[in-house]
Structures are given as C-alpha cells and as structure tokens.
Image (cartoon, rainbow, N blue to C red):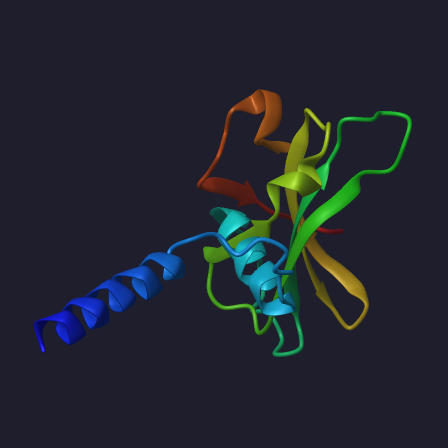
Length: 149
C-alpha cells in the first residue's frame, strides 16, 4: 500500500513539474498577440481649453491628434487621434493611446486640436504643444484653442 502511494506521489510531482516548463514550438494565438499589444500601449492625457463667443451646436466635434513633426520637409505623421462628440463645456479632457513602436525614430512630437461643425473650422490651436521625444513632456498637457475667423 505504501508503495502504491509513493508511486502516486512521484507521478503527481512529475506531472506538476511539466506544467511549469516552457512550451517550445507553441505558436502564439492572435488573442495572445492582442493582449501583449494592449500591455505595451501608452497614453498621453490632457485637456483642451476654449472660450468661444457662442455655444457649440450639437453636431460639433473636437478632434485631438498626436503627430510626429520631426521632419520639416514632410507632412506630420499622425500617431494617434481622438474624436470627441458632442463637445462639452471647456475644458474637455482627452486620452491619446499609442504604441511606443509607432514613435519610431521621431524626436519631435506635438498634440494639436480643432473643433469642427458642419464641415467648417470653428476653433484650432495656433501654438505648438510639444510632447514626448526631446520635449520630455509626457503629460498631462493643455491645449488652448483660438476661434477661427
């Protein structure tokens, strides 16, 4: 009887030992890749301030963008974008999520924002808001909008 329990105990220990061993050759499933990407995501937060003479209509929206502005001879490369609708009272908070790998070799990044309504520009930021990279500003950031004329 003792021998039977001894063998049972040894068998259980061997099986338990196999469960912690790495699984060589096991391919990652798409869900594993998605979970790993989610853990690698970073974000920059902030608020957009605006003071407009008239209340915003219900169909107005605020768009906030994180862009790579490193190259002066090329258009800015959009890294992340958030569209907020309806636009509430000022200030409006935002979160821009991005993958650090998307920053690539850029060194200058900026957050910009604008409010549009019916295809018309209502307000925009007229000064650069540098973030990440050389600026060292990891947020939260404040973007101030000026009325479009």
